[in-house]
Image (cartoon, rainbow, N blue to C red; front, side, top):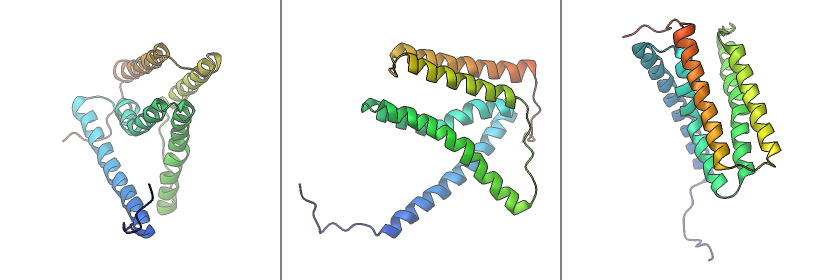
Amino acid sequence: MPLDTDISCPLPFSYWFTFAFSIVWIGILAWYMVEWASHVSCVMRIPEIVIGLTILAAGTSLPDTLSSVIVARKGLGDMAVANAIGSNVFNVLFGLGMPWTIWILYSGQPIYTPVTGLQENAFTMLAVGIFYMSTFAIRGFHSTKRLGYAFIGIYFAYVLMIFIRYTAIEKQPQSVNCV
């Protein structure tokens, strides 16, 4: 079917404006999401690290998950896996690097990053990544429902481990005052 030339298309500038405005809204909503998560953490007496490693991580990953599901249903499993890996690489390198760089340029001061649990969680991420890629390679890069359930089970075991570690074993102080 030929395109109707009478349809008015928005100017290319409006695309960039819409994109930039969307990024601004994402930034505003992300700030509120973190603030609310901190207050929920305080009120429920759950350490912020638990909220960050579970609720905030899941909330920010849901759009990536939905994208991966959509492309996987279209038979593009390679794109689904690439999306998951690419979004994690982007989050770690750009998602941390860009705001830290902006803050350091703005304030002239380094950012203090507590290392509580950083090594263990980085090792867990590396081990799970190696396990996932090894499992896919051994299976000829084919997945099944059973394998999907196993991966979901591993995630819930990780969440349980985080919750037990930071609430029962190593109690973490709250960084915000409960209102």
